[in-house]
Image (cartoon, rainbow, N blue to C red; front, side, top):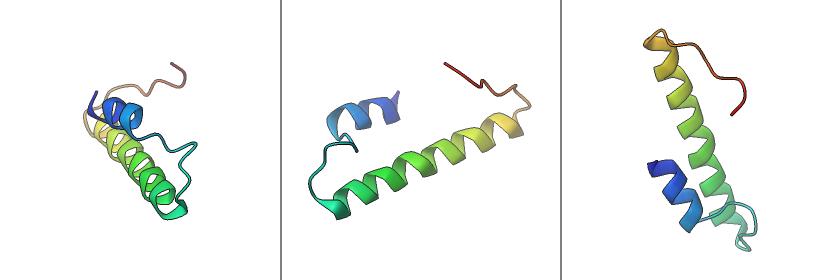
Length: 50
């Protein structure tokens, strides 16, 4: 939910400032990696498609 709210307020696509866009993209990618690793650690099955 936190990542979703962040993305709604600060979208990656459409940002004109390249540095801001790349920083936001890095945050989204790193958040995905952390969530993926936590799901694996907890032994939960990964959802391939939402």
